[in-house]
Image 1 (cartoon, rainbow, N blue to C red):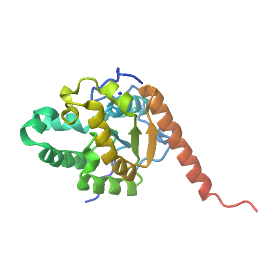
Image 2 (cartoon, one colour):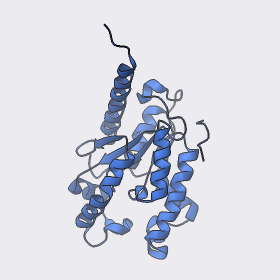
Image 3 (tube, rainbow, N blue to C red):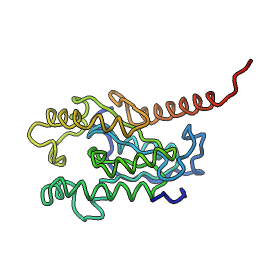
Image 4 (cartoon, rainbow, N blue to C red):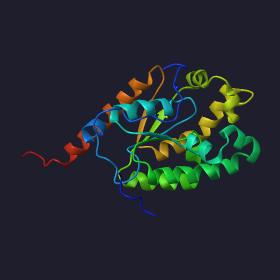
Length: 224
């Protein structure tokens, strides 16, 4: 367990929010390609709707023999309502308050792969919590995606309250607003267009290994 924290390729992305750990021993540093954070999840995934956070999270969880936790599913389980129902009944501001509490709790409790909702990073308290996590060596991956690919992956907008009426335009408007925040809170950027979840997970591993190698090389003394 981690120390206590300080005070969707094509339209066929699987959106199931939890992954059972694969058989075999727990993942070690060599599987992840980098050192584990001092506390909290092995990795946090953020990005817009349709970027494949849950599907990529499942792929990483399988590769690293870890559990996946999805904050949207946490919210629906705790509230006994769907995200769409909360938006319709209580409004977006109330949903964001529930969400930031859920994200901060997950950052404290979870030591596997954590997938955030598309708008989770917009709340200042979530941004602060992610900054503390990164300061402790945490990894936040921004999964990016183009508008046409994202809308194709999302499909019907009925379950996406912020995409009603004109999904592609609304998606583009949301991402224009949120992109600076995704970039601010993340430590790694990956474009997910035209890749399967397993391919994206493999690229994340590769990028993390590159980061580890570069960091190790920086610490080596210069050869005279």
